[in-house]
Amino acid sequence: MQRRKFLQLSSLSVAGLSIKKNNLSFTEIRKPIVVATWDAGIAANKAAWNVLKNNGRALDAVEQGVMVTESSQNCCVGLGANPDRDGFVTLDASIMDENFNCGSVAFLERIKHPISVARKVMEKTPHVMLVGSGAQQFAVAEGFTLEEQKLSDDAKKSYENWLKKNEYKPVINIERTEGGHGPFAPAQLENGEWNHDTIGMIALDVKGNLSGSCTTSGAGFKMRGRVGDSPIIGAGLFVDNEVGAAVATGQGEDVIRIAGSHTVVELMRQGLHPEDACKKTVERIIKAKGIEKCKQIQVCFIALNKKGEVGAYALQKGFNYSVCYADDYNKLLDSKFLI
Ligand code: ASP
View (cartoon, helix red, strand yellow):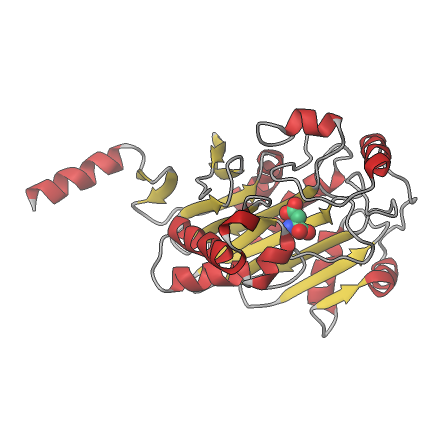
């Protein structure tokens, strides 16, 4: 009894926070809180935090957060991102609230904020998903501007480099943001070999409600018409307000195959800590695909439960994620990995 009391007191003395396996686990419900993939998540979290700290809704936070990333011409998602093999930027996005309401768009062109179109699909149509020219037509009808079809300078350079070799080969950990990700990113960026471009964000608001968002240009130099996991509810994103939320980044095809984010949430429902739920889900990908093939790809998950506990796991080294729960706490953490 005495010892338990002592342990409780010592963990409370670090601001109610205890560290579990490199991740955050709290002795009391930590809310509001927002978590996003990669280092682009730091800027995105700032915008989301502004909503959350003013008692805003998690849904508004995850929309406004990733809009920052979508707006950045030199970043990993949105119209400044890398094109498909035919030289066109095509965007996928999804959003989900605390009541299983969800909306998504895929293969959307010339619209700056696909996440907001996804939200409109959720709120203004009887459907969950719109794609291609239909999604664009809906966006324009809703007042979104049809932007010029033009590659950003960086994307143009990378596409021209890619055209020289003209082969589609996934490269792990080459997410395109300012500075890039992973140990090889800057050189790969130079060579135009980066190829995944996503931000995923999950948040818990003051009222204890969860929401999530995910927005991407998909795999770089993908086949025209290719859609990844990010707009697929249950694969790239899933939220169950009783349990938790999860979002994925990396090789979308392999996330879809195991309904990745839904799997993470279901494992949390069984009582697993978010980190353990992410780890088990990554293990499932290895089981499905085999270890050798997994060495060629990257897949990563982040998760947040109802208590405000956070976790992440990746197949390969190099994944990081951003956690924000105070004006002075918005930090980039390294994920654990299996291979
Ligand atoms: N998951 C995304 C896709 O496959 C890409 C990424 O995360 O970078 O479309």
